[in-house]
Structure formats: C-alpha cells, structure tokens
Length: 583
Ligand SMILES: [Zn+2]
Image (tube, rainbow, N blue to C red; front, side, top):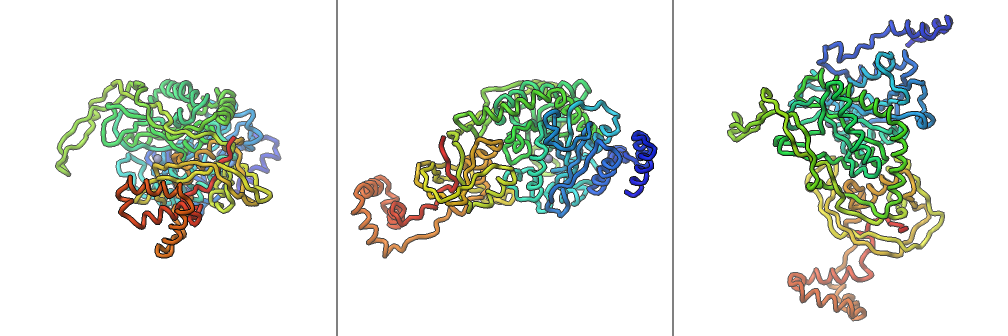
C-alpha cells in the first residue's frame, strides 16, 4: 500500500495521470490464479480479495467496498466498475444500466469467480470493448464460509478446478434457498447490497449437475410468466433470444438449463421454476431481470470459465444496448402489477403449450451396472446428435387472491418486521389504539415436512378461510401499503399460501398450537348451558352427530367441538395474525 502512495504522489507531481497508471501497472501482476495455472485452478478467498484490492488501488474505474457481515465472521465485498468513475448507484441510475453479478453462492461452482476477476481487469485495462452506459457491480464471492472450507472432493462428478469451496455456508445453509427466510447474515447483507445497487439485470453464476449433453453453457432465466407483465414478455421474446444469438455469434452455443435428473433430455423437459427462495426469484420480486449461468460440470474447467466470461460480456452488451428500454419496462411492470385486481401465484407448468429446442445431446443407453447389478444410464459421447426436443417453458398461476390495499402487522411479530425493514419496506405505525374491521385468514389445513429442510420444517398445501372481523389494532402496530416498490415482495411473503411465504417458512408456527384447553368434567355443565342458550348451534351439533359416525362415537371430540364454538375458545389459535386491509 505504501508503495502505491509514494508512486501516486510522484506521478501527480509530474502532472500526468496516464504516467501514474503506467508506473503503477508495472508494479502489479493482474494475471489471475486461473490463468497462471493454465486454467486448472481457482483463486482462494484471500487471493480473490487481494486481487480486487490491488485492482481498485491501481485503476480509478474500479471501486471495492466492504458491506455487512457473513456467518463466517468475514465481511461481504462489492466490487464496481464504472467507466465514468461514478460509484454512487442512486445518482448514476438515471443515465446508466446497472448489472450485478453474484459469484460463489455455491463456492464449489467457482467458474464465475475466476471469470469475473478477468472481466474486471479487462474492463479496467481497457483491453475489451467497454460498455457505454453500464455500471457493473459484483459480489466476488458470496458464500465466504463455504469458500474458506476448501477441498477437492465434494463436487463429486465435476471436472476441475483442482480445489474449491463447499456448498454449505459457515452455518451449513444453502444460501440459494435463503433469500426469503434469511437465516444467515449473508442474506441480510445481500439485502443491503441488492437494494443499494438495485440492478436492472442480475446474474448468478453456477455449475450444473444432471444429464450429459454437448453444451458447455446453459442459461436459467427467471420464469417469465412468474415475472409477468411487459418485463416478463421482454425476457421471453427479446432478452433470451438476444443472448442466445450473441453467444452463438462467438461460437458459444447455449441452451436452457437442462432440468433433467436420472433420465435423458430428449424425452423433453420443463423450465426450472425459481420461486423467491432462489436468487433470481427474489430479484424478480423487485422487477430485476435475473439469470443463472449454469456451466456443465463434465466440461473442462478452462472452457467453463471462458464460457462464463463470454456469457457475462454478452449480457453486459445487451444491458448497454437496451438500457433505456429495460428501465422503462421495470417501472411499467411495477405500476401494472399494483393496478391489478388479483394477485396470481403458485405457478405450474402448462403442458398444453410446448416449444421445440434443436437440442445437441449424446446418445444414451441402458446397460447392466458393474456396481449394483441393476440397469444404469450411460451417455456415449462419441455419438453426438441434434434432435428436436420438447421444452415446456410456459407456466400458469393456479391460485389467486384479491389484491388488498395493504396489510396490518402487529408489532409483536418483530422477526417478520425486521426482515421487511431490511428490505426497505415502508411501514406506517398506528399512533393510537384503533378498532377496525379487517379481513382475517384462518388456517384451515396445512401439511408439514417431517424431515429438516434448510433449517426448517416448512409447511405446504396451506388452505385458509377468510372472514371480516373486528380487530383491535394497537398503537405501534404497522400498516404496510402495497403502493410501494416492495409490492411483489410483500404479497409473496405475507400471503400465507404463496410458495415461499413467511407462514410456510415457519415464522408463524406459534399460532398453530392451542394454548388453553378445558377439563371435561367441569365443562359438561357449561356445554349443556351453552347449547340451551344457542339452539342454532345445538341443531348443527345434532346434525353433525347423525352425519358423522366417528364424531358420534367420540365424546371428547364432541365437547371439544362445543368448546371451539364457545367464547372460551381462544381467538388466536389458527388465526393468521397479519390482517388484510381491503381496497
Ligand atoms: Zn449452484
């Protein structure tokens, strides 16, 4: 560091900026670990950060910041390239496209880490065509804990690099499932970065598992129907074809992510649905166009890194070219979404709408296994083919709810409010206790996983019934209007039936358990009196007894049924504590 300072002062004395760059450049070797190793190794965490520190010290177009913490104890970094040396995202947003790259969410899939190091160097050194109006921000390595946990074995079938990090983070979470539940500090810091950068295009770099085929590069765009609106349409009809064409021009053929496990792609496959727990699904909630690069694990490491490099460059070219259009579409998408009458979710493949890929695969055969004795799948890479393959990339929503004006969340649910706060959600606190009639959900039915998944036992198949009820809203509880940038995020997290809702991720589990019961021998008298006072309920009770033999045979179930109808039964049991304010 001292050396740089001395040289910089010396150079300034001569009054020549170019000269200072010239001298400083000579002091540094910006050949990456990947290049030095002949394309067989990936940089370690320390090598990555040192590299960017040097790059930022030498080139004024590169800026490196530390932002927030990760579970490992190490900070997150954000490196930014700006041709005009403007590093304030807010003020440069108007005249620039912003692309954000996320690397090393799965550190064993290190291709993007090395490709981005070369890309930032080449941009800084002006050795490639520079984007006119695009700022490029990158998280050099997101899963720092995983990157520090280096080994040569855990990517069981992957071809290189020699050693690499591990998928689980310092707490053993898969960060690419954590974007809504935010169990990790990494995710909480990511929120800060993401909202500061507010990228137009977001790219997450990966390496795929699954079938074998000829392509080195595959793309996994955020699902366009789930994105919806004019932006979803642009993604499907312009962005994806433009990317494929640009890569083909450079002899990098690509195909949609081959979403196939245990079988062959030529039987047809569907697009991967990236719900908001995944990086691109989360980005889509903010009307950011997301894509995961998935290189193929069996291809040599050097080719995968070079392919990733070209993919990144092509996306930057498109961002640069379509800067104004994308910005307009992002705004329109939010506006149109907010004006809709219903919120549609739970997207499923529409198998009536099929498209065809000219797919470059390998012939496969089923042969006896030398290990298990059963039949196994084997690809024969000496027999490549190009065949038409059915591809299902149209999805339709299978549920919808009326769009509310907003939600009321009691302050008691501070773990949820904390996450909303980290996502810059505007919340308006009530200034005094207020009695209101609101739409209330009751949880009618749900299932729960019986094995742990990402630190949770998530719920599924959630059914609710809604009613209008008098609710006492207390001073300090908050109203959350949907008329804000976070609209999609709020619906995706607060509607309990949405695929990655806070309810499904166990944030409201305490309402699922009844806290008070009754002693049958005492309640007998109360129950009799209650039925005498409520003949309509007694009628319902008798009908239930005659229609349901099991109920008729179970005295406890009968008393419990009456208890639940009475004022003694607690209101909070199974009552979803987030209230809907209707339009
Ligand atoms: Zn991955």
